[in-house]
Length: 210
Image (cartoon, rainbow, N blue to C red; front, side, top):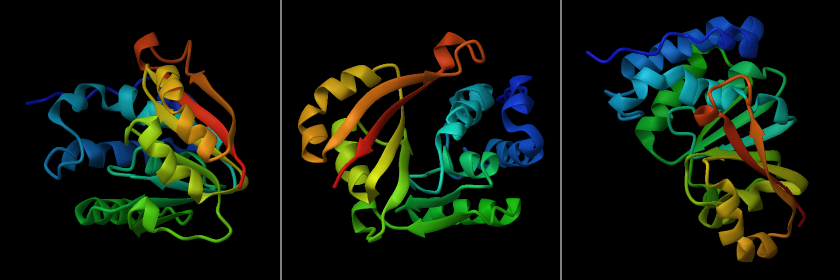
């Protein structure tokens, strides 16, 4: 039997009065995630640290309307929706079984600030655009930018959760950065001193100009 990671003390600090919702979502993911093909069995011993807290560390960066591309298990979309009830999130996911899971969680947790849309990113047409577009563990930046940048409004922002090679991905995506008129492209490291060095959150942030 795989042991699920014990909730770290920092979870309460990061979620505040929303911690019970975070606990409920984490418990549901631990209970059903592997069976429903949302996470692998190796993720359970690090579910809180590597996935839930990794996602919530970025919560202060969001505002207005947000699109989460390839929301999958709800990382980061559901976690962000829990942490930021003042922000509206649209979770965009093409796979039916994942959409079913996301919809179930939105309803079970009472997240009236979260919508679920079954679609591929390139199929979504929102004339006014989103204030912020995010994604986590979806694809390399050069592949991800054509899916995310067109969904941001003029002056909107990309906040993309990436791994340790985030800076190298920026170097490899210069053609796409120029094509989509991105500015102030940089890597920010979140959670230093809060999580172990190996589990800090790295985000690629950039502004989008049409």
